[in-house]
Amino acid sequence: MQARRLSCLCALLELLELLELLELLNSFKKPMPYLLIQTNERISEAQQSQLLAEAAKIVATNLQKPETYVMVSYSPVAGLTFAGTGAGAVFLDLRSIGILESGRKAVSSALAKCMVEHLGVSADRVFLVMTDVPAKHWAQGETTFG
Image 1 (spheres, rainbow, N blue to C red):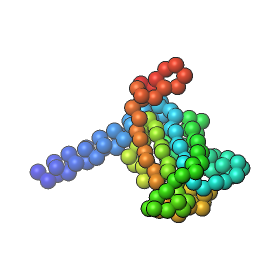
Image 2: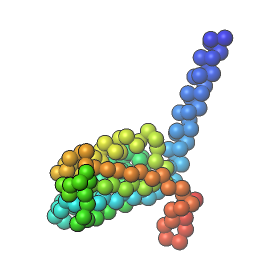
Image 3: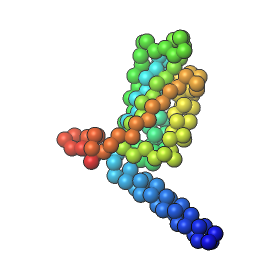
Image 4: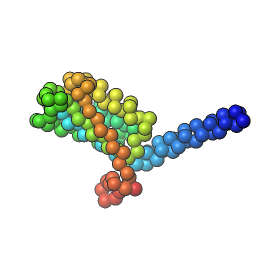
């Protein structure tokens, strides 16, 4: 009886691994992660280019998508406060078709470190919202992805 339970558990684990692999394979067909970086920290155009390039690599790597599909924008904002202070802060909005659960913590950590390095803000003042957008709600040109 115990051997049968163990066998069923192993089969279930294999199925879960296959489902995650299938989710990963499907995500390659669905491009276009988008990251919006909003901050009250000002940086030069050269620093912006470096920040955008590194953030794009982080998103591509952690979402397992080609970098050619990734769009990143930098939007300085004059008024951004958190905890009653206007000290340096960052709000990140990451949207993609197919954000794997296994990649959420890694992308969050890597992007926070990137913001600390490039913007000089404290990691506890970096906020990230991740939205897994249904393919039918995302379009490029004249057609949707789903």
